[in-house]
Length: 307
Image (cartoon, rainbow, N blue to C red; front, side):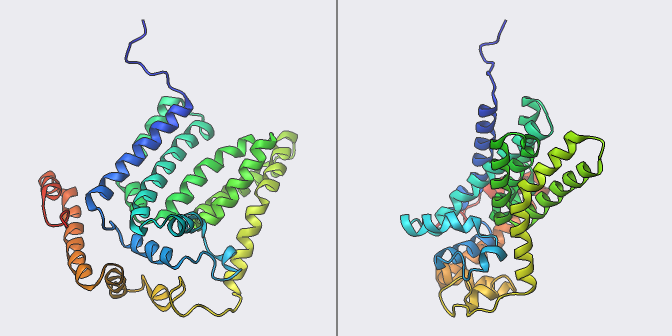
């Protein structure tokens, strides 16, 4: 007899459950820290977002991983949404997307069952490492999600739809993040060469040939970007207000410049006060992993969460 509490699971429901779990878990620290950023890189993204520049030069199309900026910048400029509020929404959404990618990779590439794939997605969503990466490195999170959705399509290149989808996702992965691009290209080329080496299997050779032509656009863009990084095209950089300004170029090279950027975005008095609270909050976060009492004290404390 079927239980009244049983759920008729499907892949669409599994993806929705994974996205919801990742979104909600990732929203918790953003809500607690509202309206301030929870990591240094959020200030970096906000600063670049206010410049409104996606490609400083035509070569930047190949040498920079601009995909995240290409949809954050228009939303910020057209809708007038506060940059930090937009990033607080984008972070959880991207993390939910990457959790969906884990589920889909387990389901389609590894051939796991639905419940086992859900368990993999749930396990990924509560890992401190994945939560830590998603809280600071949005480009990494986007690249990971695209990579996990692209790899299963290697098995579906026989159809025109699968071929086009893999070509498109592989290009987006290259534009999303360098590590994801290298991973995708290495995995694809390993499949290609292993298929060509198996000369007695015509089916494997045909599949390897399809995979090579499907990944060729992404490989071409990656190699062109690599060449332009090694032999850059000279051009005049903007001197103020843009993503290539002096402060933007030096940002991240020292703690001093991170402090300057924080104060630039929030104002000197406001910035110094919240910087001190951010350091205290970070110290207590580390302590919370060591003792449950510290965790209770952290979320019940007053200084950081009040305006």
